[in-house]
Length: 98
Ligand SMILES: [Zn+2]
Image (tube, rainbow, N blue to C red):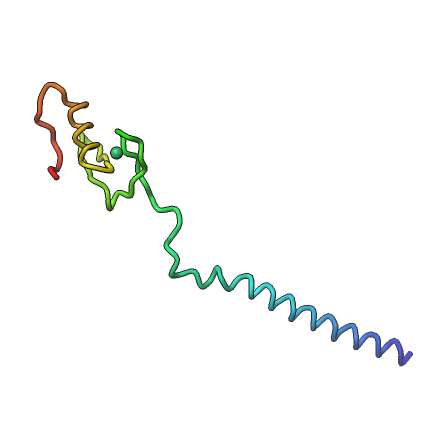
């Protein structure tokens, strides 16, 4: 009988130790994810340059408004190429210059 009580107490201690150990492991695994505030956000919205197909970040890209569409280009060359392609007859194209 005494042996059974002793075994039960031992089991409780082991269970507690395992639980705290597991909690530590889980906490350790979750730590890097929590502290990733300084890492730049993933999934930055990017748009495709219609001329060369390069994906550009809108904030850094050259933009051109065509009708109701706002297009983004990787370079002035691409933007000018798009302008001449879409408006071959007239040089008057709406949009920002440089
Ligand atoms: Zn381009």
